[in-house]
Image (tube, rainbow, N blue to C red; front, side):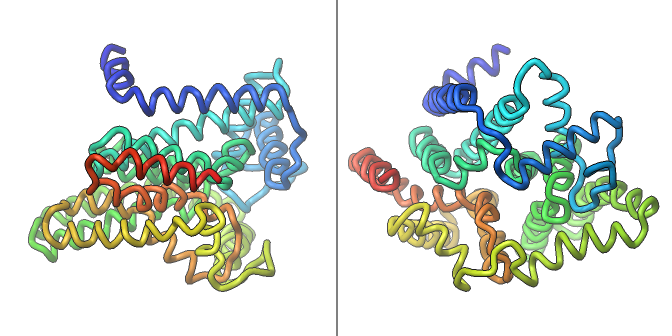
Length: 356
């Protein structure tokens, strides 16, 4: 407890902001309870309720097996509802999502603080992330995206610790399925790069890949179990309907330009998103000049490949942009690392312009 208290007091800027954010939106959710108006919200609430009522780990929808998604998210909301039966489900589940969002913002802070090593700037990255409309919307409704973000960032932060990273990875995989394995791919590529640059040898690469393999193998047990129980129905509904079709065709939204996910950045951050181009160029320059380590570059650009991948797909779903909101908030702020006396002035300008 003393160590936690020391960390919170030392990083008082982010601690204070997250406390204020938590209080304000908790009050909003409590004093303005709304029905589950979103389609996904209703599904997660109902599936979770049926799972807990039937004491099963298999997602259920109207008494039938629901094979589209893994069980973590509906089970979580089901447990929240059953353990807080004295509170409206519309309130308790949304409060739970809000507090998970606070956790996600805390992990965002840790991730980018490891790059910047400056408390004010990293806090402003979190602030800009938290006030984006996509993040705010996801922070107040039942969804799988916040679980995915927590799992991704937690894994890359703690990938050296086998069991802790496995817990974070399970959070990502058992909420969003195959997409949850994204950080394993990134870490795998990172170690391969270290081999090619002679930072590690083949033996070390094998050791690193062995850990990644066991992470994948352990979490794949659920897939094997579901296939043994439901056979080809599971393969069709879970992999084809929920994965392949979402990448190869836009099933939720049949409109939008090819630049849909790029346009989202301009909607969220306006023309000031161009600062992120400068931030990206600056990172690459510093890394090429050996001013920035490979590990810091990994942290700094961890979610960029996801953004690139989305732009290669045909899907056009706005909440898929949720994970890269902190990435571009960081890239927008990063040029300020080179400033001295004018730093706070530029921060104030960006905060004012982004929130307008």
